Length: 269
Image 1 (tube, rainbow, N blue to C red):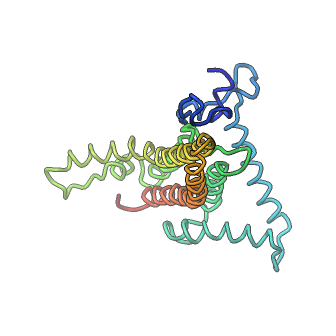
Image 2 (image 1 turned 45 degrees about the vertical axis):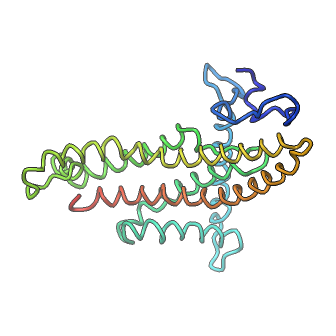
């Protein structure tokens, strides 16, 4: 694949020019390395992830480094965001006393996911980092490791496996089947679906945006201009919809993370 093919579309291709519609595909998610160090390739999604991380750290540092009793605008925004995750997600799932220690982690995950999603509609960047499966998988792995650690720390080795497998003598004859189902559900399927839910939504959303964006440009020729207008309107509507979905996906990812932690700390699975 040549470097030119990493672009979403060919800028000189229009309807009635004898070229087919340059539909987006997997090539739209592949990027040539910006540079390589010792065999390690650093590409655009990695750069966006790094810039997003720096932006988040800078924002919260600027908001709370010199916190005041009467907050300024930046501190007020920071407190609103922090409090939204703390009260709306962590406290609701874990309670105030138990959940307070997990607030920094959940706030960090929420804003990281949200900013990685938000890159999709930011000019020049225009790519959701979480549409690359490695990023949601890494975040899901952090939550999974925390969940397993807390489960065995709280219940011990035997009790931890009982918690994970839903072991309950009162289930009688169906106990073996329940144990097998719960084991595969919790140990294998849970981290997989946690990552894929975020990845698939952002992957599909980016493809839709590309489809109508490319379609708008492709139809700008002759009578196709009429249809280009309709495609452009769809692009605007989808961009607005993506703004909503980006926030929802960050919310859902952290909500599930909180529920997993709650399940690890619960007396009964």
